[in-house]
Length: 190
Image (cartoon, rainbow, N blue to C red; front, side, top):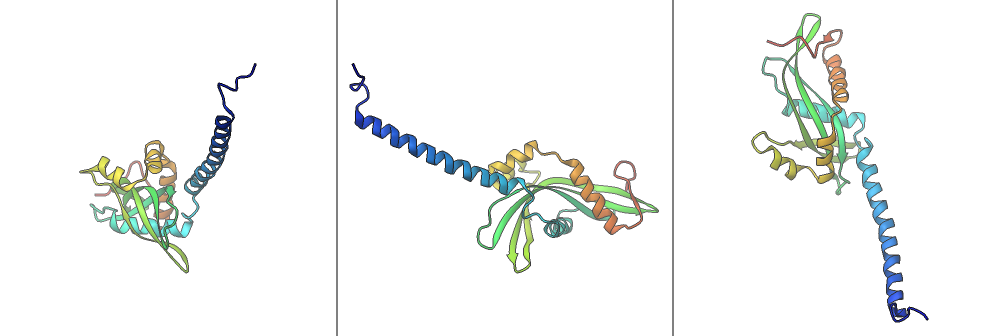
């Protein structure tokens, strides 16, 4: 006795085709997911020249100099969207600190910390940041949803590489104030 009345041959063929399609979709989906993870998890397009240019851009437009000092920004790379033609968006956590020279010490003043979506354009020399969007205090949660894609929002919650950002601030401070010691904990501007 067979169970052919429960599973007619036509139904078995449909199940086989559906199973094959699921296997193919799973393979493609896994490839697409792994490509996105690879694209966003490695620093890929956030090479040192792009990082330096991005930090200078953020210093000029986001940094605060409430005590007459010099704003210096450090960033942590969170990921990037694939290029769309000659443009792409790259996402970073950023902290900008005002630095003031006080003798042999560099003191700190005003500071700001946020996330930013950098807009980059491609030229014959590579990618260059030309602008950015950052959430405002007034509408922070709404702005985060509007500016950042879901895979970056997840990283904003789980991210916290303050040591990486502090090291970038130390490097940029040494470039701006050679021979002086940066005091991120004690010395204050003003």
